[in-house]
Image 1: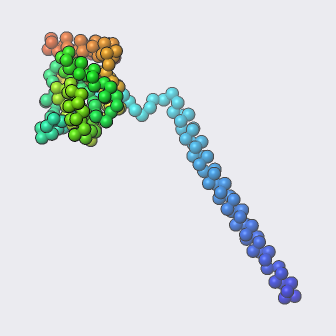
Image 2: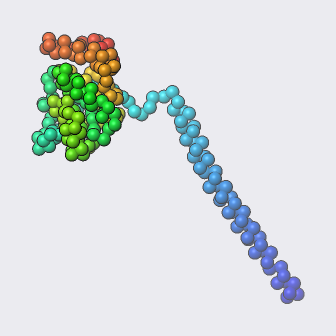
Image 3: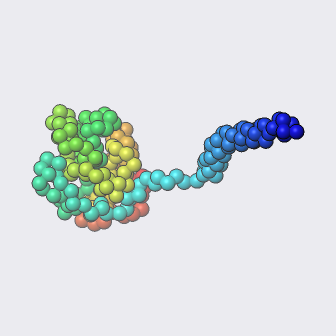
Length: 219
């Protein structure tokens, strides 16, 4: 009787081992199912956003004054520049950095604009001052002044999406046009020149440009 009772003892152990294996298989399946559920949720979210505006909004600074700033002059960081130091005639505010490949491509054309008498204000964006000054020493300095935006906050306040970008500002300090990407001869002639003509004409008459004209010329 004693022997017979002992021979039946392993059965619960086998059942326990079998249950453990079953649980492990279920847990393993869960590890495969959870990422699949997350992926499907992500796909559904993307599908639901199709055709809807993205979170990045360009031209956010149009028809608004240049944001208030107090930033150091790149060539002499002991001097703090403010909105009062900006030109009182229409000008271009160009966001640039020595680390920016497209800025390097754009730079020779900016030098041409400077030779034509175009007033350019530079905003050196998230750059090392030594690299920035070396960049201007090598390629020439097309800017009437450059301010150092080390944190990048001022450029973001302007509406920057990525360097280089240029904002056309009228004589009253209002941003009228936003050029995303490099300036070149093509967009200079087709977009920027018509806008500047309207702004300069109003500035010469000492009046504010008509909004309808600005909207048509500064698209």
